[in-house]
Length: 170
Ligand SMILES: [Zn+2]
Image (cartoon, rainbow, N blue to C red; front, side, top):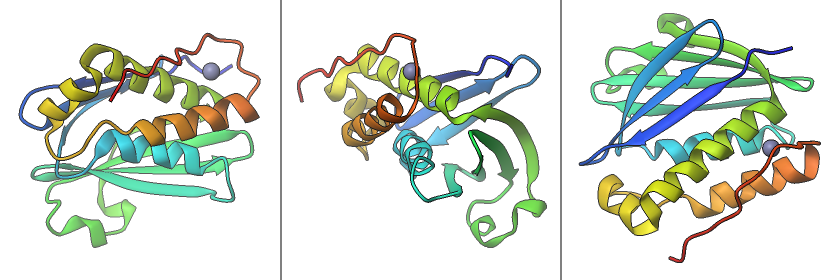
């Protein structure tokens, strides 16, 4: 039984967000800037693991840090590793081993997808599409990435938990 995964995505003003991830044993918080479209990247990466992809990687530009996510599909599970590098200007070319491992856990893909979806839907509920764009500035709310992941999760996983399907008007 995996520890219950928790994810919070708090969109602040001026193109910054706080991402907090935790399981029963470890917690980490990351600042995310709008230089990368963090929430869209997270939704897309988890969605990618339902297909042929065994490995998804993306990073948050955390000015000046790089926060690199590495998601490895292992049968029904996903090993998540999040690395920090001090300078995003140079680090995207560096191997993972040169970063600091800030958080790691292995969770069922169905659980990871459910939690990411719930968190992303909550962001939409709190801000709406207009409010999100006002705060995030460079990127609109990732509606299609949310819908794609939800479709994959509902199709492939026997998830009995409730799913909020509300989409506010554009
Ligand atoms: Zn679910």
